Image (cartoon, rainbow, N blue to C red; front, side, top):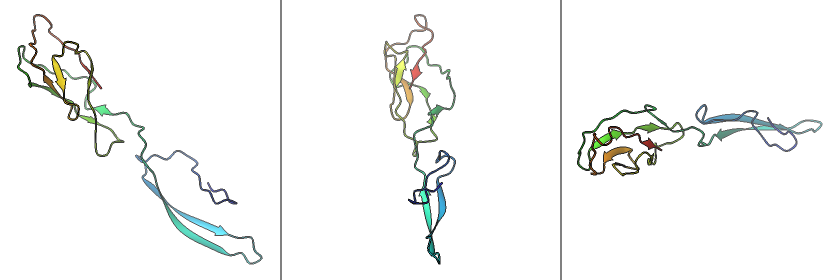
Length: 133
């Protein structure tokens, strides 16, 4: 939508880079002379990305298992996430709840959850529910 007296061009709808990354426009200008003069030019409008999509994991809930008395560094689960906004895919992972005793560690860059070396005892606690953000 153009403001004819000023030359400003505005959108009628919200643009989303995930739908279309850019637009070519032909801008045409004409004066009001007795013999009108005109000119045109091509303009490319690049749509910039906005962080408007929530990161998602492959599954909403995971059910891994790990042997009791596992030493430090045993892999429990590799969290894989994706975000339609992030390019390249860069995330920061953390265990936000369910780990007050510190039985588990998470690599903040890769999302790999490992044992911390604290002794896991199935008879004492058979299940651990972690929330990762």
